[in-house]
Image (cartoon, rainbow, N blue to C red; front, top):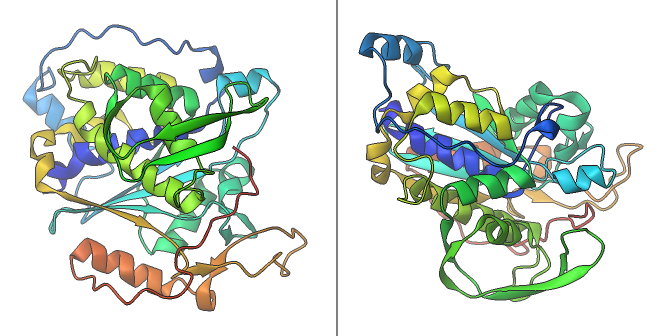
Length: 351
């Protein structure tokens, strides 16, 4: 059953791209243009026993459920050329799958959440993947299997390579303070509710905007928009315009790993691809951690690093653990909303 959700998980993961991610030393030398695929059909080529052997080596084999962390950084080739050296992982979405209940959960946490004596969006660049992984396991109560990371450039490349992404815009809004392409000024951008086929640049703007009107001016609402893009990518990957379709797994894996970083192996890609045809059987839910679970205590006093941060209510993530578990089990019961649940996530870290 886990195989059936596999590809849905993977491609949702890839899209995390939405604000994306880490670029290693080699990536700075790689062109954003993708090679032309020589598709071989939906089923990977090769001896069936060989393919089975690859899938049997996957980290996902025999898992009761699956969790992939989708990470997006605030960097791009342009920003690096203008002198940016570090980056923040401002987008962090835990993609969780329960293959028994056919539930897929996209969980976003505030980028200014205080954990391990730092903001969570600084953990990767300061300490590395294992520290960020441990932090997410502490916060969500879920075992994290792997990650996918991409930066702004990789986001645009992937969306355009799919021929665009269909997005159901929930709310119309205008952002009069969106940074221009050089980060040297501001421009106005707007979106109208309804279905829109977005290019890579347009989707990136939709994913990054955080100062829009009509209730869209917060990191919390931005995270919800990012989830809409992730969901749209599931269908976009197999559009007639997509260069990835029909799928050739080895070629696809090579292309993806040229543009973004992941600790998933080609064995895992074979495993995840196996049952893409069954993706429509699974229900995807968007879950953004808000004022029901965390609060802002002021300039945090328990560290020399005084900053605008969020901490768990009651100094415990137990309620969040339980709610994530129940959402995946299909046993979650909605409680009455509490006052200030719709918190505005910090705007201290600039786009």
